[in-house]
Amino acid sequence: MVPESLLAAVDLGSNSFRLEIGRIGSHQRIERVEYLKETVRQGNGLNARQELTREAMERGWACLARFGERLTGFAGSQVRAVATQTLREARNRAEFVERGSKLLGFPIEVISGEEEARLIYRGVSSSLTPSQQRRLVVDIGGRSTEVIIGQQSQALQVASFPLGSVSWSAQFFGDGVLGKSGFAAAISAAKQRLAPAREAYPGTAWDCAYASSGTANAVADALTAQGLDGRIITPAKLRRLYEQLLDAGHVDRLRLPGLKEDRRPVVAGGISVMLAVMELLEIAELEVAQGALRQGALYDLLDHEPPADKEAAEVLALQQDFGVDRAQAERVSRIAGELWRGIRPAEVGDDAARALHTAALLHEVGMRIALGDYHRHGAYITEHCSLATWEPTLRQRISQLVLGHQGKLRKLEAFIEEPGLALPLMALRLAVQLCHARRDPQLQGIALERSGAECRLSTPEGWSRAYPQSARLLELEAAAWSKTPWSLRLQLR
Image 1 (cartoon, rainbow, N blue to C red):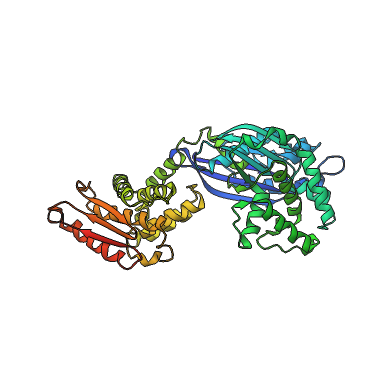
Image 2: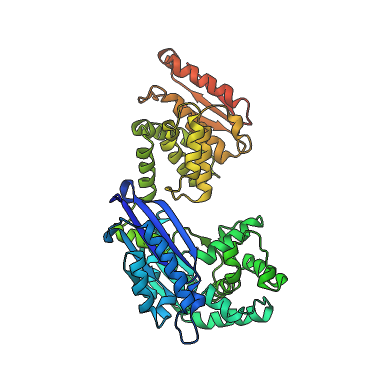
């Protein structure tokens, strides 16, 4: 029996078929349970008559039969299977869809380019933090490229163009040769095909730009393997990869670090289209997003918009999943925020306060694993938990704060000189000590101030006698900071 909380999406793309199974978790978020991908390359199986060859159909049917076995027991309301550009073009798609649906066990829907774009945007938005920014999303698939503008989880403007990594590689690099003339022709033709987007998507219509799916991830992996920031794609970085393809001269000789084998035959076409998009729309940088069409299909099955405050919902869900004492977490977060205001440097941005708030709410998330060294378990959870969609820099800072909120500080010595980490960490550690009894501490008359690298905490007369354990914990904390570039001077009365 399949639990009713499971949903599944099948994406019949031009390059790969994908199956994603997700569980409906806390606050209507979808948690990945399983992900299967097979490189089918149906996009290469269209002949001159725009019909899928028998070999291409057999490859697809074999994959769908395997997916169908995995989906045994799912109800129709739990599965959505969608096919994109290759089957939109194929004149014999009815034959493929009829048998494929039987093998899969669920109807396959050949969706329009506009519907594909909408689902892509919904999938991408599900992976991003809440924002009122207008987002441009570019998705270069095997035989189509989608360009979308949206806000929050709603696609506002969608377009689909019939070009992609598979079709452009076959058309301009079909003989495997990677030369300047082939790239020039591919980029020029892509710009002509995408020309309507120049007027429809001016730079004034969007605030930030994202790239999703296969080509974007392949480029990101290749850049990261070369020591570059693969999360951000720029024309200069693309040109670097372009030069490396030219140096190889032929697909068979291409050994690009980080490039997966199944991407090697189609990477030239994908990079050509991406260069054309960025030049045509004058995009300075594309941030690689993790969401995709299949996540959009899952959320459509759920028929529930992600919560307005997505980050708060994710934090609450983690607290519930790991049995966090929410009252204590809120208490520590509130006290840490008050202390932080007294020592915050003017040059440190709001991200530090955001990381401090989140880390305080999750500082005990590792206790369900084991009480001993729970801060290390908590750091691992916050660093690797896929259910939270913090951007990488924020995720790293949250994890560092959770790791450092108790115990010796030398485990963070590589970062402890940074005011943006050290001072929020001091506020968090002091809040944890002051809240040790799991009740609201007496803070009236307590002040935390900073002068350079020295922080001073003072208490009112009689406080240390009234709260001797708290005073002792503060003394131990001051001793811990004395071994760092920072100091904590106490005036306990």
